[in-house]
Image 1 (cartoon, rainbow, N blue to C red):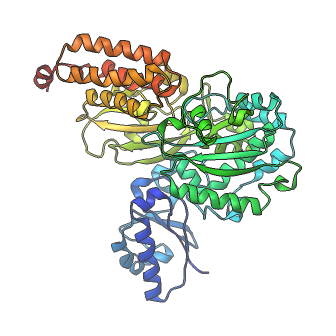
Image 2: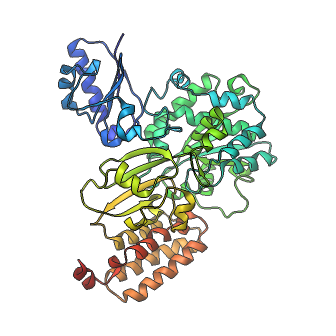
Image 3: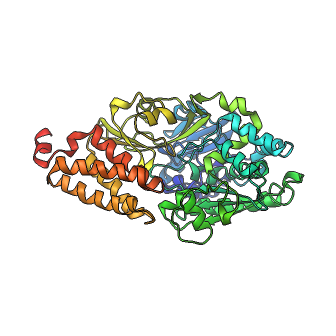
Length: 518
């Protein structure tokens, strides 16, 4: 049997040196005259172990990592191709604690096989959900997705089935499925991992959405900063079309559905669904007032489903295993699993898919292993740059949409950024206002002007100028932005600002008092 070596082509792994490792392995094979097949898979998401190289042996796959080009000769000398022991030896990938603790439903195939092999995708359960969907009435597909409890994984948490039902029930000669892959939040990479590591699951989810709602055309809107994801998705769409997964007769059924990839120009606000629609139509990416809702008048004025990558990629397992199976995971109104993306000052950064319900403390202390610096955790920001900062006092908060909302927080796209006790929360609050000012589309006054004034007022606080009076002004500005902004960019900026002021008041004292406190 020819040995198979798996080396990630995921851009996160590439950034950590995976391409150099691949070339070093190719060179070593040539020099030793050994025949082996190199498979460029996606990443399993344990980025603290990347580049993680795996080899298929008679006893199963064995992982090594993080591998450096300088390790390659000694790896081969240690019997790498048969799973021999080495200082980089990790054992069976699914036994690595970070991966073994996960509940992988959406990411079940990610990082295992060649992302562009449709045969490999099918051998691991792919297309079963779509096969079930083409044999069902559209309303029954919508019902199953609704009963599963799936909610939008892009941050809003809106029930997916209700959105689909609205589009199904709205008359229209043409309907669209739009996938929001404009993953712009800091510390988020789940969408990119799926598109680079398991693109067919997204294609399958979009095809199911099309069948369920009567939409025959789909678009994936990917941020321009993801060139590897764009290339992989384009290739996967072409493969799926050639295999009859897309086209006039999806899997040989009377249902028609096709799709294409579109690339954004790097505007953060285009992650907001109506700005995204404007951008797709070739217009400037500015927010639209609602109503009308996109489900009724969306892309080109037609009924449109807009879901994010993880929402759509979660649909195939629901259609394969059933609504009850998926709904069995989670807590409260948060059903199924969530891919938590761990970043910042942590020992073990990466993607951790699990059922809703773990506490923030379990995620930060147990799964992430605490700070990489070894210093105490001061704050954890959940939900990207517009998420609230939680102190250790709130680490008992379960990962659940409603539980976070009760404590003035957001799950958002489930990105977690950890800060140690050297972080200055006044600077973090100012950054949130500055970020909003830079990224604002300018459509509404609370966001456009409020964020600019917010930066100015926080600078006065930092300079010790009437700190109490100016903090009251910041609070007033935040209320105006929260309730007066047209979209979540201005509406959510108050979360990081007010949580910093509320939970870390010592960082907002005038400069002399802060020095004395330290």
